[in-house]
Length: 270
Length: 270
Image 1: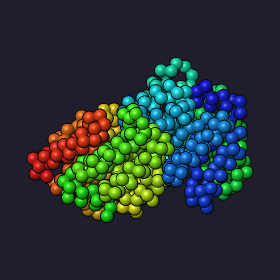
Image 2: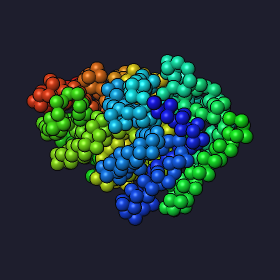
Image 3: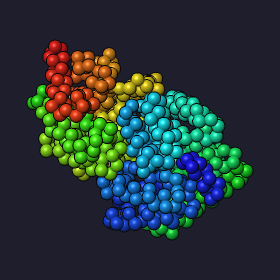
Image 4: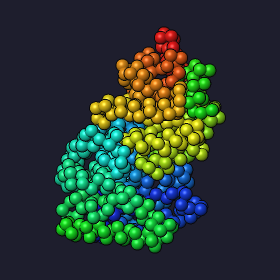
């Protein structure tokens, strides 16, 4: 099964559209052992409530080689739970360099995983990522409109729309239904979600920004298809550090976000 | 001394504007030992002819944790030669995530190094990178107009110009002369280099695309300041694999690129 098939099945069988961001912040811990143990415990505790996990590479890279080894350990633990893994690395480069990134994160150990991709270098540079995702049952989630206030500096002026058109073209190559070419749209733009859902008919959507960035579950239903699939909403700090390092609080926060998303979708009949 | 001071001094004392891209391609080797040894030998052989080195992260990440350890070994070897290190990672993300990337690659072991940064997420997202570079004597090189044909998909329509304006604003904060906020402009756009040099008065320029991508040293003089500093031109495959894995050929290619750049600048009196 592909990443998208696994994600959709998990959404339906477990009734969850929540993506667990796992971003271990070194300043939250007194030691590396504590960081490692807490991150893995949060993963275990929240697994029943989430559709996938999303490790943010920056926090692992900030921990050096040890951090990159931890990232692989987190991925291995997620595989034990049969949890789809969405690698939030926002990679992007040209030609054979893009192909090397795709080899790194969409093949081998990471075959079947999904990767966030930055489209700044142009549409031709998406090809190696899309090809690797298709070949190995993975997926790419291309940045369309990010969750931060300053995104319009570069993404405004029609740039987000142009990227969405290219993703729709790529997605259509795979026939009907959700494709392996997803899109990242900030949950912080609730009034635009119906527009992006319609503009990206084949794209699974990743919506970051729940919790700490201020997005609310009730405002996000327009991002989903009529059957309640087609999107996942991610929260990171708002789960992992819901109450300091309290793992039970993290678990409760994940359950709460899951329930809020389900309740909102029930109200709209999705 | 800061990255830019070291780069400028090396440009002047060794008379070289060449940046050595070190991108070990796994398919060029029969074993990891061979890849490691060849990459380190190319570095040693070419060091006298280059102003800085530029490891491209994609090729190290494609080698897994072993590759990331090799990247650190390459950096350590460059430090032995007192070679400035320009980390070609094209990182970019928002808020505290951008800060974590900056911590990873512009502080600690990597204090004083430079990092390429992708501005797609907006100008506010450059701040953590610029602050870390200033604090630790490093530099950032922000993508303005990349060397590939498809760059205009996103960078066209005035986007490159808008980014350049922001870099000029940031560079001016540091007073006169070259700032720690550099720009990446493809050497494959020779007719635009005078424009970008004028539009980015405080920015050291990184010009990728020499050799394999088709740019020629003679066409690049407009990217330099009148004193022949202010830019470095990078070549990767064209040096490391000039003739298969022949290290002497790599050394000769580096010397040749260096000489071609110097000859072109001499003709224009720079």
